[in-house]
Image 1: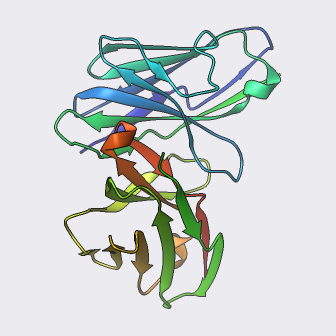
Image 2 (image 1 turned 90 degrees about the horizontal axis):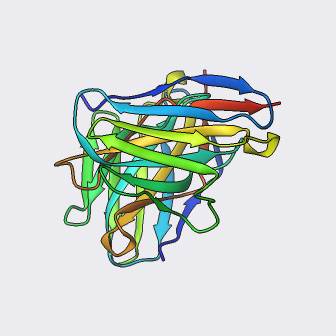
Image 3 (image 1 turned 180 degrees about the horizontal axis):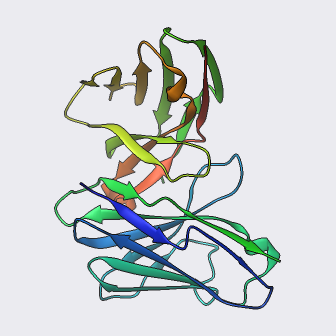
Length: 116
Length: 113
């Protein structure tokens, strides 16, 4: 149980284009999902908290117009990187918190983004 | 806000030996402490967690201990195997910080066969 999927697993795009990443909780409902970014050999950095049916809450220093988050259902959240640039290249990971699981977060497999 | 420090940054052990990774946290209101294992190119996998009302928890070869007074918690892996090689992250959750995970910097564990 507690499986989280992400799609796509990797994506290469040209500078200036937008990329959408999906995060799904497969066997549980998640009122809250989180989006992280991880650079090589570093820890996970929280970008934003996504709540179903409401606006996402962004961490300090994360541009909300650059990283659009939509959490339209209890099993799906999407992250759109708008007008991507090479510095946006990173490993993006989502996590989901079970409706009844209090603090426990289950992570997806991650999406590798490379912007050329 | 919460701050989590993790040591060591790298750890090499011989197969069959034990490995111990230690973390300290700053916020006394933190009440949940998960440990994640991350293999190369994959997302973190929850391997064990402990809540503040418990001092120790064990799951087969993995155990976690928590000392609330000293504000530190540790991961213990016994009888290590090559497949235990990965990056391990500790984390702390504080309700005062919106129940968000605050991660340590990570420990690269290498198990030599």
